[in-house]
Length: 242
Ligand SMILES: Nc1ncnc2c1ncn2[C@@H]1O[C@H](COP(=O)(O)OP(=O)(O)OP(=O)(O)O)[C@@H](O)[C@H]1O
Image (cartoon, rainbow, N blue to C red; front, side):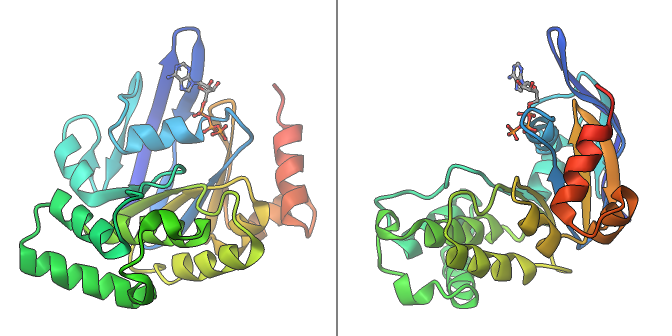
């Protein structure tokens, strides 16, 4: 079964069509990057898929559950790590993870167990007692992703996961994201083409609310007739008539 399937998904804001008849499928366990220049409709798509905003028309199904008629089931299977880091600055790393476990009403025992498990898995145990505000941007983002994983989501949305990070922090986060492959379906948005190429099983390119292309990074380069991914993206987006 596809993890996500959208059927003519559309969102209009007054005179503007932000997402225009999107038909997209994302396979279970893959890392799928949604690409597009500013205003292409990526965030609006993700907002609809997370039931944060209702489509004007069309529908989407997450593991067969409709965002329109089964939004509670959809919300239970997703987690989001937003662009603005979602950590509580004055709480420690451990407290942030426990707080998130509390949000999901885990028993104290389960909260402790999940906190331990995720801290160990993502090397957060060495900084468990540190306040989040004292962490570097890369570690804050790492914590934010670990917090999103507490509920064991089937689908994880990562919005610009390495925005503004230095090259080392970025490479560490890439490793973290790669480790989720096959376990959690990951949808990520990014403006860094190197990141999309390096992490994605498949990519989708949007422009003016429409999907121009879906396929592997290799297929995208072949389609655009270049061996450079960034160049392929530019060609695809520029070639499309306004
Ligand atoms: N709440 C809103 N009201 C009116 N217009 C909106 C609203 N949200 C988004 N838009 C418009 O919809 C279009 C798509 O926006 P969206 O944020 O989905 O694009 P994006 O691809 O995520 O861009 P970026 O890469 O800059 O984040 C844009 O023209 C934007 O101005």
